[in-house]
Image (cartoon, rainbow, N blue to C red; front, side):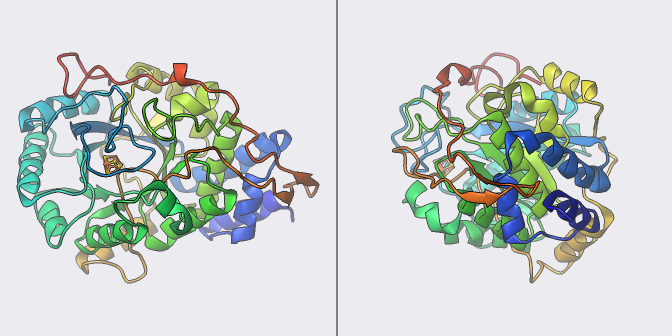
Length: 412
Ligand code: SF4
């Protein structure tokens, strides 16, 4: 049985592949790409049908962060000309959230820049969640405020939060090259705190920061082990004015391979195409829907996505359907685990990790060794390491100038 048959069979049973199998997915060739997408698509449809969950970002507080995450346009010392503003008022945030829900979003993601929230910030977010749920009681709310202190996750849960996002971003080995002001262990700790408080864990990664295939596989297995219920896959948006501005390491084909690897390792977990979808997948975005079951609608925190209507049209044209408020996202067996963890105050095997950002590699270029791999079809080939990344496409990065924090209507 060749690689893709094995991965499909395992995925249909909800089994996790070996690390070597995951690496082999990243080493497949462009000639094999549609077969890889088709195999991942079978697994996706087994657990999630043709549903696409829409999530909507509301940036509650933008820029001026004291942390130094290299990939982030809001970081300390960032010269990126992004919107900078302090906390939105609850009614302002609720207005933005309402636009997203009206556009089809099932989950609203409330994000604030910063190392972590003060207790006063938790009060603010509590008021904001109340304003949103007053208008839309069914909407799921995910909160992303950075590193949590003791009891803050419990307070968020009691205030009505459904989930907490804190991304691991990259492998433990490379985390220190991305961020100096906090550690990988800090991020894991926050995910565990959120999970322990009964919040659904949303934790993912950022690809394209100069990391190796091994780093990608490491972080994806770590997320599986932590029990993340949703795994956002970000593709680095190399903002001018950040240390990673020149890190254009991705092609649409590479992005699809990464998504497929994430799907095979997380067959029954929500896999979300997050930031960088339009910038890096470009015209191949619809193929991504065959692998991932979740995307963000409209704009991102500091950059603009395609029009919300274009997202909806793409989903329809590709033969998928927007997941409704009354539909469960996770398969029943995963939802049962999540509910048991919530009832029991956390699950021993799963410590979801979450975070607001990615990790990043050294900003001065990437030195992936070109790995020799056996391909899905059995041929031995040398994968061009950064086969991709060649062109600087800063023309594709559009700073967000509408929606939250502006006088202009949100894109939803
Ligand atoms: S990812 Fe979050 S913590 Fe890191 S610099 Fe950006 S806003 Fe700050």
